[in-house]
Length: 242
Length: 268
Image 1 (tube, each protein chain N blue to C red):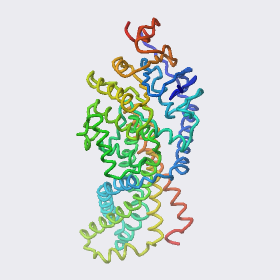
Image 2 (image 1 turned 90 degrees about the vertical axis):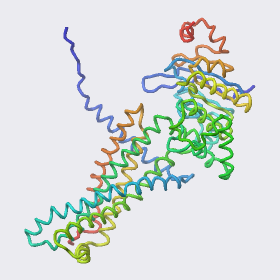
Image 3 (image 1 turned 180 degrees about the vertical axis):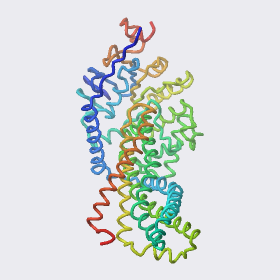
């Protein structure tokens, strides 16, 4: 089967700091792939290349049959509209209410009427079990609620691919389960492909079909979580506390 | 045991290179504003919201400033004018100084303080919390939504607020004059506008549109380029005020010289 996302020999440096040193990986359609690794291993930098928030120094980023790193203008916009992104802190617009955060996207990218947009927002909020937060301000939400609402905003336009940048960082175990279960539901109910950047073992355990372990800018190990955990490489044993 | 500190001498060339780098980067930012900023989708609702933010919420601040400056200017000038037997010229002098220079520059500087810090901090914090990246990932243009709307709001509202400050300044001058010498309001107005031409009022008021553009552009740029955390946001806010204020004063020099060349001196 043709991969949904294919990254080939990706290199990225910031000044003298070489963050990615030739990362290659593939994500099959409908699967959830976790990219694990410690802080500063280049996980977030890697995922940002998939939506061209960063451009590589060299290497290729394929999404379907398009090279994301080469797209410009409308072509890039069209591809981005099929990708949802959950940022580390949620990135909800704090000058708007929760509903306005959704409407910001829906109003600009759909031809739905006001009433239809309201229905869609309620549907999305119900999906993440936070329908009562329709008029709330992002400042009044807990960390877990913020992530769930940002996730719902990310899927507002029915994307085919969802990117998660540390979706469970800073959350209590109950919220980690809630968010991780939502990632699983995206795959099972909506047949969505996902890349999850995480260093949270519980999140990977619940959500990931496949794990890539990133260390100092290179994929050190790849396989199921169990296979990666059983690796005898010292970096992995150190990470998983084995 | 004594601790010896080695302090690296400041590399002046490095600082100059960094400064020139920033100037070049700002130039590119301005160029992208004109090249890419005026494309669909038009963010009309956000523009109106920003005009409200810039305008409505600044009326009190600029109004009080104008009123106080007009009254103080009248108080300070009366003594000197009396010495030369020219007290009757007070309204005229007030109108000239307020409309031609004090009103526009003071309004712009007060607004640079209020808006420069606000815009720099708001966009800076949107940068560090990845809200700007989120707009980009949604296939929207942060430049259109955040920058164009704020810069245009400043360009449109600065002249409006300047007219307001000028009016309040003249009113403050009248209040002081009425209390000191019971001047008739019609006589005050007639004297005030005897030697002011419409072209002066227009040119001196409209120059604040340039000042508005400076405040909007500089603050958005510094906010956009924030890297790091909350400390960087604070620095962006502070730098926005300082850079905007300095550039307003320099631009004023240039614009006054240009308007003298185009419209001539009031005495000519």
